[in-house]
Length: 309
Image (tube, rainbow, N blue to C red; front, side):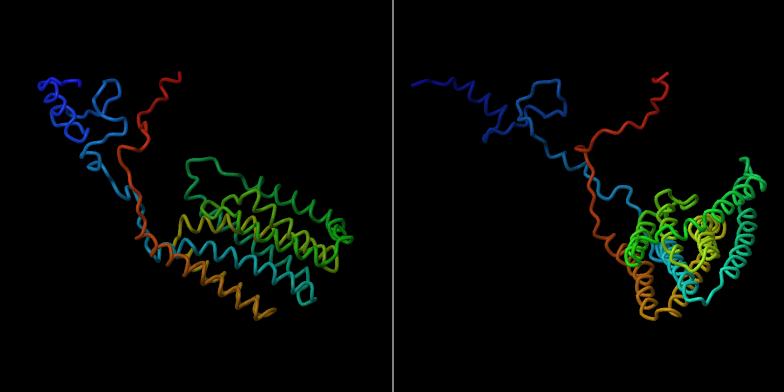
């Protein structure tokens, strides 16, 4: 029978404690370079003292979120307005000349307002000249007008159902990939998807002039309008809200003149996006529970750029 020295047994209990737990004689230190009589996963009672909950969580206000969601609603309404104009042209209720003149007037008014708002923001940077803007517009319109007969016959070998399906998918891709946080300039994927859908729909119109008018309208709605709306959001927030509401009303009203059922679905979608989803976001915010503590990865806040030179 092995015998134990009573002194060593007392020291063992003093160091390790009764249930193989460290006693108070050897305090635990949060270090890795020193051998300690503790398991590797041991922590003391001070471990949870550094627990922090919901650090840096942004608290949302309902009407502020509704205001930001208005950009999503108006973009959905812009797609509805574009489809409504296409339906009017397909049925012969809207002539391409009328659409071209209306687009020209709206473009000039929007360009003037954009320049007025940009002068307040780009005072320190060098803005684009009016001549450069005119050259860009002339190049686009010239190429579009020249290729309109080709675009008109682009999808002759494709069935109409396939063209409509591709247009619907591309317009949905436009809405999903649209950069709502910073829409000026529009995203490449979003703009290309919208123009692709416009070409598909315009190819089903009666003549080449109809195709040219529809593509010019698509450029105005999907490329230029978001840039102007972003300026309004930055400089005149109150007018921005009114414009978004007006666009949504125009979208529902225009689509209702062609399809009452489609107008009802659009109104329900707008209500869900601009009213219901912000409410859910604000309500679910109270259930958010992010914890931070000593187990988080280390973050270096010091500027280390001078070490790279």
